Amino acid sequence: MSEQQPYLAAPYSALAAVYDRAGYSQASADAVPHYLAYAYALDWAGRRVVDVGCGTGLTTLWLANQGYRVVGVDASPPMLAQAQQNAAETELIGDAPDFVQMDVRRLESPLGEVDLVLAIGGVFNALQSLREMEAAFRQVNQVLDTGRLFIFDLHTIYGLARDMPHTDRIDFDNGQDLSVIVRRAFSFETLAATHHYWIWQRDENGWQRQEEIHIERGFPTQAVLGLLERTGFRTLAVLDPGLEPFDARQDADHERAIFMAQKTG
Image (cartoon, rainbow, N blue to C red):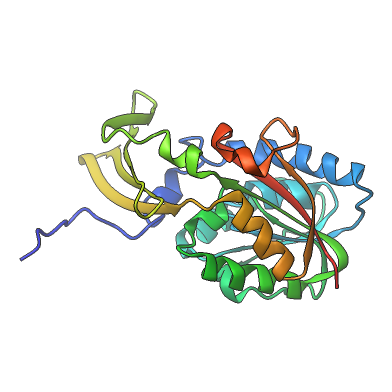
């Protein structure tokens, strides 16, 4: 009989409420303005945006405040609940964006055909096979207008594997009422990284513990480029986090790859 784990929760069900406090959403929120600046340099223009894997909605809300017509989609109800709470607490120039629960492999656009699909923060690393990624890319293609952009990033195999030691690490501790500890492991057989989170929060009853296990899959950059071409995209650029050109044949040198792709038809 397997050992019961009474503290183990579904991915993001406990982490959602502390995701922003622990700083997990900040890197994506900081990156998006730079990605958009690069897109404008590629002569992109548009206002209708789908933010895939929007999480707690920080990027979606920033886009809304820049005048974009945007909808945030995510598969996790707790993350979307936190996004709605963030929207209620954020001063917005116009209407609050919609947040919709949706699996990226069955993506649809409440806005009709859009000018940009964003998937930032390793959204597609949550998929467990190239077949699933191909299905997701085909759905992205369906919601984009012809000639418009698909911008996403991925943790490379190297980026996932570099945290291989099976040791616990404090990811966040505010010294008062929240501590997040993570154990990361990587399998070279499956190219999958396992992240085991221990979330400790203190309330009037003392310290409360919850656990989550997340799995991220690594994919060869060349294979991702092949899928983009197969699903109706032309790759305009592959970049490293500094927005410098990324040689797909040398993805062992980079922890993350940013893809700028254009729907061809």
